[in-house]
Amino acid sequence: MVGGSVMSSAGRSARFWLLGAGLLAILLGGIGLYMTLGITIASVMWYGALMLAAGLVQIVEPLMHEVETKRSRWAAILIGLVYTIGGLWALFNPLSASLVLTLILGIALVASGILKAIWAFVDQSRQSNAALVLAAVLSLILGGLLIAQWPFSGLWAIGLLISCDLVAHGLALTWKALTIR
Image (cartoon, rainbow, N blue to C red; front, side, top):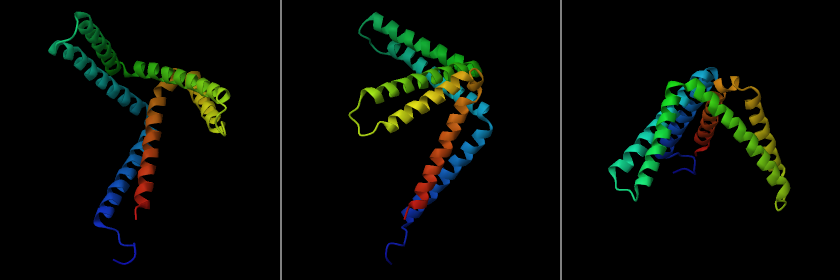
């Protein structure tokens, strides 16, 4: 072997697959940026399908196995019904569900920003609170923008966030592939 410049076949294979996965994620994320409504609807429907499946399992499980009390059986079934109804609602009303989820996300981001700001001012044990204050400001801005543009933001926000995440993940995979020696 000459120096460290020869890449093993395993390294070439890993590089090939990482690069392929990275480029595919970038491509899919880029496509998603042009069709955020479609990605939003598909994502909400996928979430609804997962909720429906979880609800059905939650209903069937206490019926199939012995439970401690009748109350715990009915509580488990009731929880399963809530999941099932929520999943069906998201599947059959994905636009309405996306509006609700976006509003909840906006409220959660604002609440998170407020709590981060309080934490930054109350806890003075760190060398610098700048990163925490920056995170608080960003959370407040993002949450405020989602709420200010609601209900319109419910049509694009989920799809935009998922598409951006795909692009970022693709860039990370591509970078990793290009740095494998």
